[in-house]
Length: 459
Image: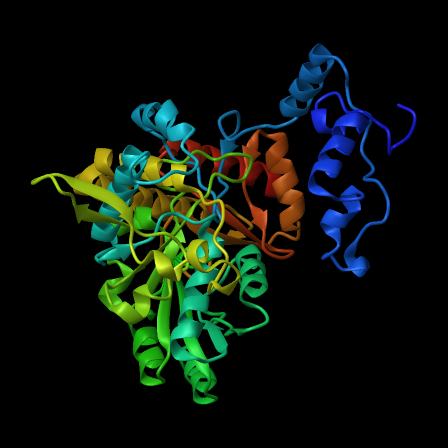
């Protein structure tokens, strides 16, 4: 390499000066800089990225990547009690078999006449999700549950024409950050503190915020970031509707085999993440978001994302699958769209559809019962550890739950010690409080090992 301008990257063929110049000549541009003219100067870096020199040997590059990957310890290699939005569940082998078929794995985009199978698979996913959620309309998956929450709240803002958004249950800090970023500058997010004694929504505080007016939506999670299934969820619906606001509920769909869906207690819009439905953890990711509503025009018209529907064909008894109300999307409206919709996580929707079809109603109930039982046992067992308290004892928890350390050591110190014992868990929620999670993959022996390890660490 002689200079950054004339450098030729071994894996970027268009970086060759002659090739780059030919492309510029073809389109009539003087330099690559012209392509970025719309980006404000104040946010531009004005220097090359600080990157290492490219490895010119494929063998050297492969070895480097293997070394980087070896630094990761997955939840399959350690005993993990991590949750908070990305969960360790068993993914049946048939799910991987289907989603890794080439006709799904490589089908990024297409039209009904050339991509009929993918459209039908996603329609089947939407149909099963609609049955699980007891609604009529479910979207093709968006990036993740955080974005789904932000979009659902934006939908509420467009429907009501109001600005303020009230978050009434305990919310994950990362989710709160994403929602705030997604709804600005059109909406103000107001976090209503939960009752510190119960961890549940403070109905009086919510009512006081609603009385100030201009509330587009009340948002609640089921379960909340503390793992609590709040008994006040139906009352929040009454408060929201009494003030002319919509009620938006985020939920873990895996819990709906044993818990009533949001529509049953007044939710206008339900949203959440389908990672729990047959999607592997992937370096903290593997997420995809859903939005669900009743089949009412004022609700459906505000979906920015794709909806696949069923349509008759010219052949009796045969049906096609394609976009519903295409004109409301940014694909049709471009810069005039309600929101921009680009690359989604549709492949995860196909995986979730396979998972739902495989589990069926009885399987969903069984796995929900198992997680409720494991959660209850874990909370009871850890409460027996000296120096550990398990707050919010009167509330039902699903998967996630909170512990409080009383022995003087910090949550960060205890978490680090657990890692030394090959256990992931106890994500700090402050100096003396931490989050744990159990699912169907855990056993009684796993939970007992966590408890005895904490006894050793804390004593």
